Every structure is written in structure tokens, then in C-alpha cells.
Length: 299
Image 1 (tube, rainbow, N blue to C red):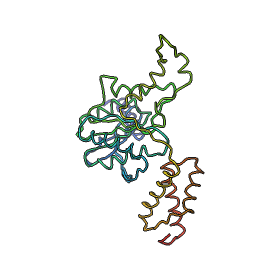
Image 2: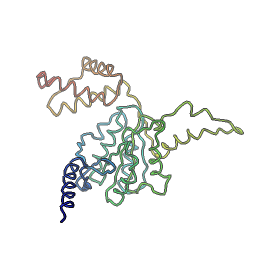
Image 3: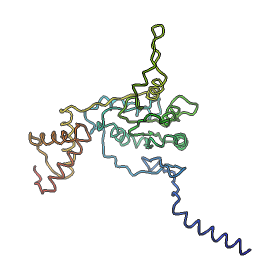
């Protein structure tokens, strides 16, 4: 081998040794027989499904005050798991009211029946066709979960999501449903200027095309479930539930009285909202404080 060629190969090898640590590690395909959930993860221009270690602690019985929404979503999920027709679902409404928890609780309920969960971030929706291609031939049933889904003005990724539903030749396979949560009913920001060109023609209203385009995305979801802010009674019931459940893990007996109720209300007032997340956080705060102060077993 010529000295010049040998020197070139040596330099190339040294360059590769320095570059390899900077390259993303290859993502293996999850073993769906043992893996319950995965997340689509993009590294550079490539992406793959990374297995997740999930703690399925939330049960369906933990979701208080949203029985109507749970009944509808559970029925839809049971149809899907059984191989019958089911709808993509949009869970929208006030923050902290149990939208994401409901999806995780359904995974716990139906994992043994072949249900799996795949998370995808809003910023990665352009990769949806790749994700669907990896799931299409699997024997399991997959919920493609997009949490906190919304789009700002000027963003076009939502068009990929529209096409995956029923507006394109390449639709989601039969073993994949899309469940999304959002604080917005129509997912896209709606501007007052969208209505500037509305006009009346022969008694018929013709809305501006921008409005139609924005509403069309949420219309692709066959199942809409609305979640509303908690009343004070609802909030206190959830606080008691989480206090009793978490205290049972430490053999602590919780006595609910006016003092504890007032403390729970002040906790919510300080945060400006009453919801399930706030109730769960208060339960952890209160119980942890009691244990840290060395409270007796009978509180």
C-alpha cells in the first residue's frame, strides 16, 4: 500500500473515532410482548421508538367526577381492543382535570388484552407516516397518544395529522387509534381576523376558508370529550380520595375535619385553580409533612 494512501486511511480512521461518540445511538425496535409503552424519539434526521418504563399507578376508579367522559372513552377503547370499529378521540378542556390520566389508566386496564401506548410529541407530527409504518404489521392494538396538542398561527404540522385521519389515501392502520389531549377545542388558535371576510349570499353564511381549515382538524376526531373546571365539592372529594389512598401505603389514618378541609382549600387558592392535579399535589404535600414531623400512626 502506498504511503500516501496509508496516511489518508489513518487520518480517516482517527476522524471516525472522534465523530462516533457524537452520533445518536441506534434505537432498537421495542419487544411489544414485554413493552407496554414507547415514545417516538428523533435524533438528528432519524427517529425511532424507544421503550418506556411506565408506572401504571392510576386506576379507572381514581378518576372521580369524570364518569361520563370515562364511560365513553372506555367503551371506545373496548371496541378498539376487541377489533371492532372505533373512533379517534380528542379530550379537551381545563388543565389538570384528568385527561392524560384517563389514557394511562386505560392502558393499565387493557394492557393484558394487547393494548399498547405510543407517545409522540407535537413537534414530531411530521414523522407520523414513519410511526404508522412501524406499527401497522404488529399484532397488538396501539393508541398513538399526543398530549397537550395545539398549534399556533403559521404552523403547518397539523395538516399531516389531518391527512392521517381520513383525508388522505394513506390513513392510520386498523390497529392504531389517535388519542389527543388539548386545552383548545379546535386545537388551533382562532383570531378575530378570521371572521373579517364573512359575507351573506342569498341568506346563506359563507365562512372564511381560514375558519373552515381550522375547524376541519378537530372534526377528524370522531369522539369529543369535554373536561370542565372542578367545583369546590368535586375538588374536596378528590383530595379526600388521594389522601386516603396515599396514606394507606404508610399505614396512616387520616381524619378529615374542618381544619384539613380549610388547608386543602387554601392550597388551591394559592395556585389559582381547583383540579385533580392540584388535589393530588396537596395530598402528597400534607402526608409528606406529617411523616416528616414524625406524626403518630393515628392522625
